[in-house]
Length: 392
View (tube, rainbow, N blue to C red):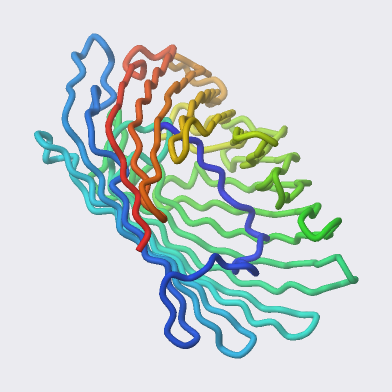
């Protein structure tokens, strides 16, 4: 995994007020179809095996067709997106997969009050995070709804409720653990958020949320969380969103230590006066582990990128990433590597060329290294290849 994904807060608007220009239009319906060859190259360590286990390489390719669509019904608007990842490995047929990601959302504005609702579904056979190296089939389905009221001229207050389910296939395993038994769960969350528009392109936010996690087969993993977050949304040369705050994570089991501390989420980019674009993604949060002895870890991660225009449509990008997985073990339970810490570093780059319009070709190289107190979890991986993105 060469990038760090930052999930948006539940209280953010589900429908973009300024959608991109549509490539296809039929009456009130708009659509932007795309297709991308996200990678055609070599993976030097298909299974993220430790060096002593003789890593195996293969030629791999991922084709990703997709589309974003929206249409208006009076003042209301409905949006939808669909994406498929067709993953191919030349020799290791067991690693081939078809992954689907689908979303639909609607907003109904009524003067100072607007209602929103949506649903999403994904079915993917991939690595679900930095911890689990097995490509295991897991499905996620969720729905959300809420309302937003303009309390003052530039201040909006929103209430959002969300419920989602994560389920692994029955025989999904990793390091001897059954992932369905350990990680399949239902998440119920509610949030109250306040957004104040400082300028037409800058806003500040304040969010308070409550989350309840219930596991299907391992009730001793159940937990409750409270988050208090403050953030900023940018929309000019400095684009994106960043938030920081406090999370109180309280497991149900008495022998699992709680986490009360910093949480953060940011995905921002800055374009200089010249031709340089700097991007940064930051996350600090709690995530569940497959290991019953160490039920969760605190993930701290930073990924930065630097993109510079070279000549005409030719540009180059450099990427550097770092993630720390600090595990929390059960109280009084002896483990071979109790409260271990894993470090994952990624260094990479690409050279890209915009052929015409929305068509771009690039050559990418990424080197990932994981170091762990647990020898079987340490590995190195080199990926290189070509990607092509085309918007119809």
